[in-house]
Image 1 (cartoon, rainbow, N blue to C red):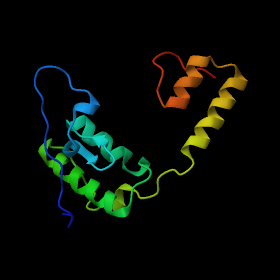
Image 2: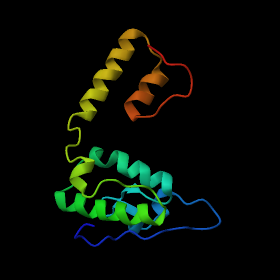
Image 3: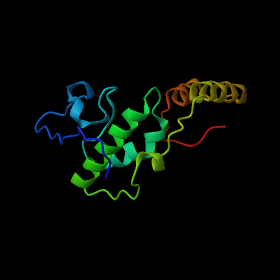
Length: 132
């Protein structure tokens, strides 16, 4: 268990679907930055998987995020084998945006459609065949 007090609280709004802006800070792994919402088990697993991809946060923010992930994982019964945030990774990919831009340029050279190039630039996956 970490020494940082978690701020995460479950949030289950009934009725209309909520938008990200409707969510309170307490449902985020990184509440100050409002990154990695954890409103169900799927989102908790996503926060764990993307922990080291979050940019612009301090070690203290990561410690709080891990405490929040621990609490949310217990609530939603998600197995978490890591015992501290260092095990989830602390080295975000500093050059992600540059790498994505190079990938788009390569796909354009190969003749990939504009929609596929845009999806690559925004990080979205297509649902059809792979291009290129």
